[in-house]
Length: 129
Image (cartoon, rainbow, N blue to C red):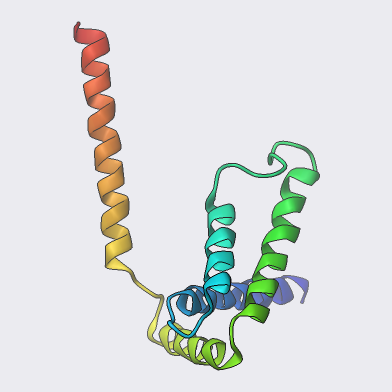
């Protein structure tokens, strides 16, 4: 029972995050809400935290508190009609399967290729010079 509750909460948080992503791209969303959503996503994906993760207990506590609080604030700042429309799009997308972004995939592959080529050039200069 307990793991099922957490699983449902995680799926709900995932859906809300995707809805906020869509809302940030909607022209009806105010600029300050878009800025907050961008900040939340940047903080969530950033390797730099306010409290480093290796600090016992507190390291993950900032992620468990700050990100959900930021998401809750962003939901309050996005107009209800925009958020309702985005949530509907999320439900439709989730029914069809997982959302796919070919552009994001291409960017990730390009970044890895650039890093690999850069590493090979660096290694060549170090070891063959």
